[in-house]
Length: 147
Image (tube, rainbow, N blue to C red; front, side):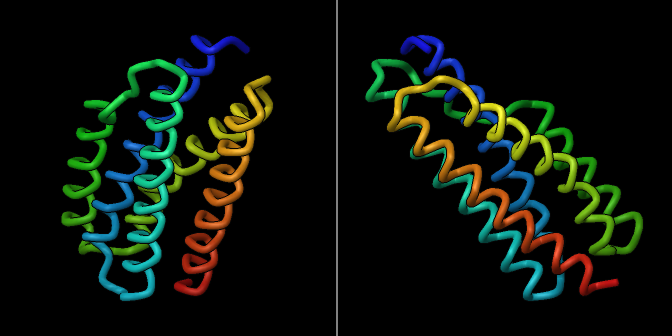
């Protein structure tokens, strides 16, 4: 994969990470159990850090990194807030809302790891993929405990 393709791949992942960061932060604000609130906040910070690290990698490759998420994600967060408010701030609804986004983020990272990227980019992507899986697993375990 050449530098331009690598930059394009990283920028796509940066947007996904920014979307995940903001969605998880919004979900943490909606949650009321301290453990869930903290786990969602930690997961949000992970995506913030991952986006920052990928932005630095894009700079090193001579590209211009993506800076923000998508408008669709802003709309998604607003709808999540309305739905959670209408249904009585149920945490299972909060978790349902973030689940699809997190599966998408993991899938995109998994696909990126399989790409033929430079070794330092591959290592970065692999580390982010495994960390995303770990955080997502923690959230799933909390969900199971809540039922």
